[in-house]
Amino acid sequence: MVAKKKKVKRRRNTKKKAIREYSKRRLDELIRDSEVTNYNMNRANWPQLVPQITFILFLCDAIRYRETIEVIAEQAVKTYPKSFVTRVGGKKIPDLALILLTLKEAKKRKWGYLAGNWYRGWRLTKKGRSFAEDVWRRKTQKKK
Image (cartoon, rainbow, N blue to C red; front, side, top):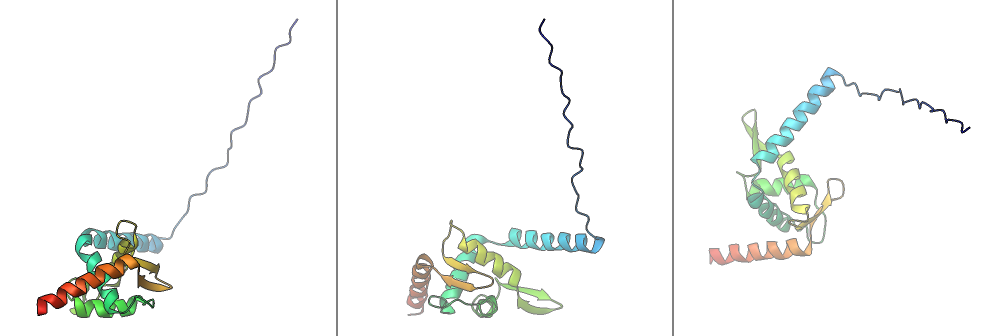
């Protein structure tokens, strides 16, 4: 006679996965940050803002040297005051969140105009430099 094999029951992993528990304040902070990011992403007009930020880095001489976001923000307010400014308490201040999102968008492969990050600073790539020089040439021709 052939012996029947006994079926062995496997135990399922009964450990529950840990769920992160955040404090109410932390959850409110996360929600507010995501709302601000979504607001800036939705109000941004990338085809207009990316060329503007590329030209701003050209004016900051970010071809050879990397520039910090504070320097870029100052130049952005001088060059394009309506695009990169927000109002807080009735005062106009540079919108650093929008500038940072625009810098990140210009860095993407779709555009390829910038290189860098928040910590090391931002600079123009060869493609970005040639684009900004073309914009500069067109602006100076209009003035003549």
